[in-house]
Image (tube, rainbow, N blue to C red):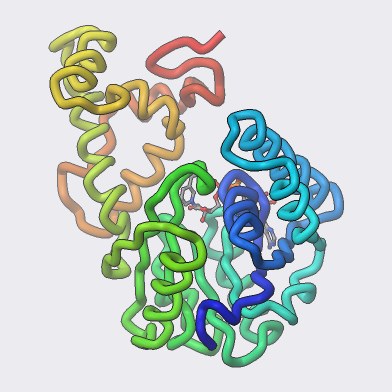
Length: 287
Ligand SMILES: NC(=O)c1ccc[n+]([C@@H]2O[C@H](COP(=O)([O-])OP(=O)(O)OC[C@H]3O[C@@H](n4cnc5c(N)ncnc54)[C@H](O)[C@@H]3O)[C@@H](O)[C@H]2O)c1
């Protein structure tokens, strides 16, 4: 199947990332069926999509008619079985190995045998999901960035079992249909972006921890000296300090290198509930 023949996409999980992926796919013209764990979560997922599409209209990024048409192409279900008619499935459920293995095992039975199953996972080996699905050559990583409707990048991460045809298909779909810029990385923890981002954030936290400079001066130095849109401590707050810590732990487990070792201050801030912007406090306060 060519990317232009993808009429219905299945998305598993409609949280932060899944809802954004549903929106991107629907705005690109395909019908989307998303699944969640319960009817309440389906409603919450749909609300999240509606709010995001309304914001795009407010900002002049989307016409009213296009917004309405996109919403009309989206349906939610509390049962993975609803994905039986999908031409492509993108999984964006909670980042837990056992949960994802169960989903890929089920998708292997539910989706038509020729359908590609992609995962948005940030850290779980794609090869494990590929083997669980029973169609290892048709499973690949499609790693979107937050928020998916805004961020242009898509990291494609083939497992050692992924076929060249599967990779070519998701590359063409990501580029030609979704309008993303695709990069490709091996199926190793962190891919390209997190592999570079996490040691950088950890270095900034270590400088702050050692009292080299104030948090404001560290952020201002990077923002103005390196022309970044945001300094590293503010960025860590935005990503979430718990998420930043979790990714660091995964990178350290995979590579065993000191550059991936989480700074003690980060661990203590997470233990104290200072998780960044979403918690109202991290390196900064968000009242
Ligand atoms: N948050 C980010 O910035 C980011 C960026 C790139 C990739 N990711 C990846 O995207 C995935 C989702 O992350 P998120 O931040 O959206 O998490 P989230 O917690 O916001 O959303 C996950 C959703 O999956 C649902 N879910 C769990 N099990 C399910 C199942 N069996 N069937 C259907 N739905 C199920 C949950 O109810 C929840 O709504 C993870 O693999 C994560 O690593 C996250």
